[in-house]
Image (tube, rainbow, N blue to C red; front, top):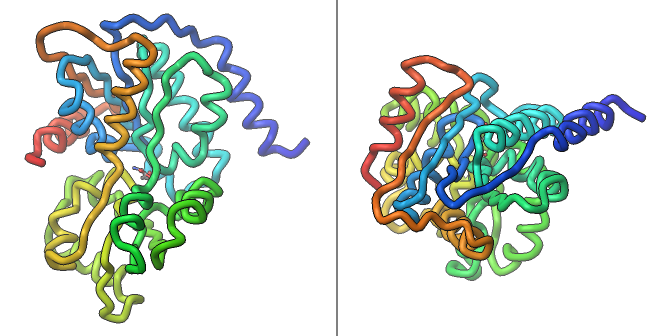
Amino acid sequence: MNETLRGEEKIRKEAGRHDYHPDREGYIGVFDSGLGGISVLREMVKAMPQENFLYYGDSLHAPYGTKTLEEVRKLTYQSFYHMLDAGAKAVAIACNTATSAAVRSLREDFPSVPIIGIEPALKPAAEENPGGLVVVMATPMTLKEEKFHLLKDRFGAGAEVLPLPCPGLMEFVERGVLSGEELESYLKEKFEPLGGRKPDAVVLGCTHYPFIRKTLEGLLGPDVKIYDGGAGCAREMKRRLCEAGLENEQQKAGSVAFQNSRDTEEEDRLARYLFSLPF
Ligand code: DGL
């Protein structure tokens, strides 16, 4: 047996040590490789304001998108276990990279837990722009993994789909840099291979990217439609909670708590800042 398989078996074997006793008042756990998943958390709070949320960012190990598949699987399982141990009634993997690496095996290992993943919103982008150029910005791992290729084969056929790996882009958000010259020149360079051709649509296939949406819009102009999967992910969570009879029925606003593997005040401040930004 090779080393990769042995490592994966070890982390999956631990599954039995993590109990799941859901109750309606429990948290919805939302996690990401860092602060990007807060873009999904915002959509969830908007869609389900009466729910209690626990957000966990693994900024200490970010970025995930340029790591090996085995490393990302291991980190995703660790974050997932953390959510269950904190008493989550449902878990959102608010990270395209972690979803493509581990959602399938997590669902196999925890069939009774509602687990919602996120994937690039290629389906609406391709359907609404038939024959058009659809650029999918995401991490190198998301674009390399089988999940994306299946998505592209299934929904991308009616459009010209151009995958655009963006290593280094999530780091801007992790530093709280959402605009400015450095970010603009990064983005300009990324779109250079298009040779001035305007895409019809851009899919934000990483949960960090909605935070740089305004800067991207400024560069691409108002005609380019931008898609992200956050709202769809929130709708799916709502549907799954309802199906499992786990919606919180309290009549007041729920709580939102933040945790980060890089346990510093600066990280907490940045998380709250990103959460508070206007949509
Ligand atoms: N936010 C993550 C995603 O949606 C990835 C960022 C990273 O860790 O590379 O893919």
